[in-house]
Image: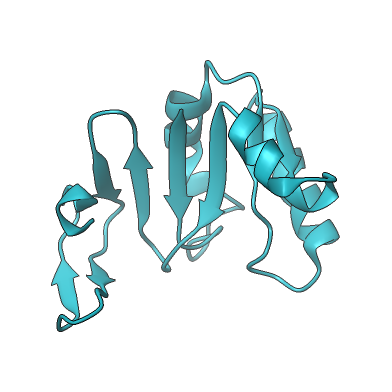
Length: 128
């Protein structure tokens, strides 16, 4: 399964998901069914429609879990998952690594530890 976690859907003066379009196509190109977790915004339906249209424009199929009868089952049956993260950064995950991508650092919060700022290209598996 491929997972791409994105902190924001746009960057200044760029269109919706333009900054991660190549990563979306690379990670999800072979996926038959990608599920979208639209809970970052109150209007889940509008958010889902916007994401589905952009994925369609990229030649990818996206299904929002909020429309399924069983979101957990939808995630379990998916070939990929699309979720949000911190502004300007995203995480590319596969069977080998979970790498912080994008141009910005991210802050990692772990119970019992001080927050840690990590640079781009950090493999985040070390924090699990």
